[in-house]
Length: 415
Image 1 (cartoon, rainbow, N blue to C red):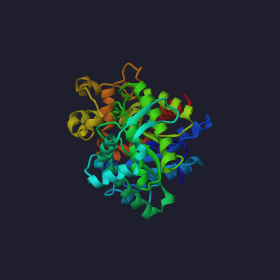
Image 2 (image 1 turned 120 degrees about the vertical axis):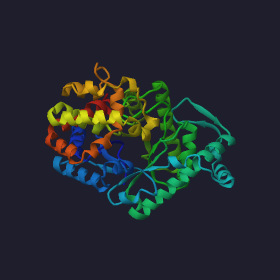
Image 3 (image 1 turned 180 degrees about the vertical axis):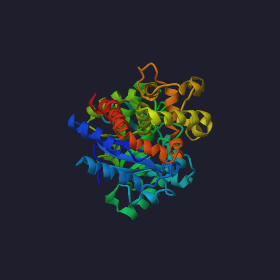
Image 4 (image 1 turned 60 degrees about the horizontal axis):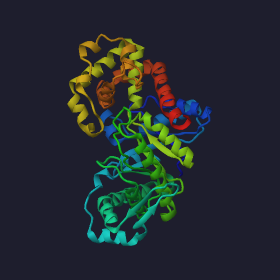
């Protein structure tokens, strides 16, 4: 199974928007760009909302049949580990192997030395194809990187082989995620990591490194865009070099775990993939859930009332909700509107506050980040939230489709 050049990971936390999401990919195809949808949902998200992994595939199948989609599509077991992978095996064909917990774990000195001895090509002047950059790398550097990442690569190999034994090596797509760690990987570090992953005989089709800058949930990139552009292009060159050195799959490409809505780096990504003629996988997070709230707000009535209740409850429980995401959100609590004010707002006002249009005077990035991590509040409402999604399917779905096509797919792939 081979992942197509352009793929886009979409979340659907309540399994109600697969058709609305798929319409965006259909419309993109009509505009001349073939982007493959990859529906993703992590074990943590399933546990928060009380769903099971097969529900993601079921929703995708229903959407594909409803819209007559004839293109490729995939279902991603997002951020799985050995302890959590089993429920995803039968219903997923894309596995994001998350080894963040193993980064920095100790390995024996003999293993590190054996790795460095086997990869003398990593020592010296590392030239990157198509780039003017040259990195001077000595043995101590390679040993430091191996000490930091070798255990993680070994863990990735163990998880990969477990999946391959269950499904067959030709029947799934493997991604390795290194993005949920404290420090970004430099291009020479990425080359060492790819060498170690190749040693594990992983048929790696995407790699998700951590880039410089902040990728906060639900809001735009915070950082130096020129630096990101340089890193992204150099990482493409590293992948090209690793494919030739280690026999990794020819379609190996970068995966950007965006945390949603990194609009300001889309031009840099688009320019790089067009210039280099390579693919990219971009994964969003909670955008769809926020578009559901926007649609319910616009719908008015009970939908608007529930959206207000979710915000007010989230504000009252902000510490509890934000704790699991502390490293990927920056909320200024003083900029969050008071419950008594929000209770008086009409639907368009609340929708404008949440919708990620930075030029909109009412847009509030702090509200958006808080609600981004508050999806389990909606889950606690039981069928009330889901029934309102059903009752307002058209207006909610329109928000989902427009957001995905106009704010993501077109800027990323069409400009």
